[in-house]
Image 1 (cartoon, rainbow over the protein chains, first blue to last red):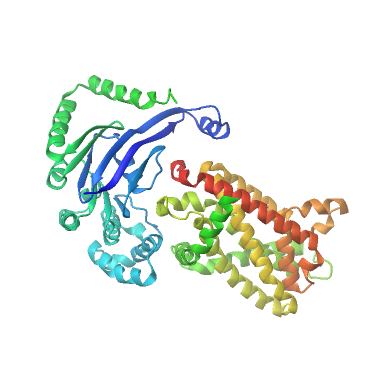
Image 2: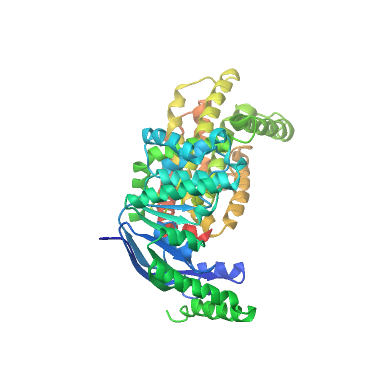
Length: 268
Length: 268
């Protein structure tokens, strides 16, 4: 199987500034560093074969969403590169919608920006509306929607676009059970079609059901990457251990990791 | 130079996108208030009335400007100004307010300011049409001089786009630019030949007032609408100056835009 996505030495560096003046100085003065560097991702590399389903796990702040966004091409990596064949679609809870426009207008706008022609858009529109189960709300401004409705709309658009590679960032945990079921079925359908998928979720049971491989991130570095059952059991063990740590130990653990995340900044 | 070609090529290649996105922008602007687009006419009408009252009746005591009555003189110039301020302000905001929606690094980002400016252009054309009808009844019928109007309109569009390429980039990086620009535009309202004729100033001040490129556009509109002559032919050096300014602004804008575009999303 050829590789569908290749992630090579990807790092993402953010800068933390104590005050806004530091931020400005950092911009204006080129050869001096202001603020504290922070690596959300550090030297992450892995390959994903075509048609496989990869789950991204890790505790909060481990860089799952950052990685998902970099693979999807929403944010640039500071160094390293991501190679992919096929178009990628990211499904996130807060899919960018224009609050002032109606649901229907948002569908048209999104599809337009993804490069579809007018006839294609017209053909896809009804299906999306049907899948999103928005009925008469479709012609109401999005600002009147509930959060579940918004994510249903976002999800339906991204799914209908029929991408080669799908990245699902916590998007299946919203909406009611019936919709979650429906989305999962859709995912299964995609799985059968041999699409490559990434799954970001905190739900281990969902991961078990769905993923073939798991990438375990811990504070920006790859802790383990391998077959789902293996990595997930390690991850569960770790979670158990982590849960049982005292407050102090947890803090120390985090502090160690945080130090590591900013240390690399010292050497250029 | 390379970036200038890149931006230019994007503009041509994605012109349909500019056109269609601007329609959604218009709809988004008009939604939410009962009178919708009508405000694009009502607002200017109220402003024109109040300026006429304060400056025409009050301060100038009904003195005409040269042999043109004050209302007609001010009216012809201010029509251009409404488009200028809206274009500059909304264009500057465009990138940091829209990027969340459009985010995908491969989106042709230089399209963002141009579609936002374009959305302001439709109400401007309507206002211009209504303005010319109004002028028929107050003593300034359509004349051969209207033929030069498209030149100034194209010039203005080109300059607005070039300028907002710079300002939208700067405003995304440092949000204060938006505030600064708001003050500058308010200042320019009084420093451009809109509410009072700068010919009242001493002779040696005149060239400095003309450094402001909006001066050229506003006078151009006035010459066309009031049939005063062929402005661009009568002031060839000034015309060259204006074109030069547009070119330089565009080169700087394209350079800045291309340099920072991949990082825009990190500045949010």
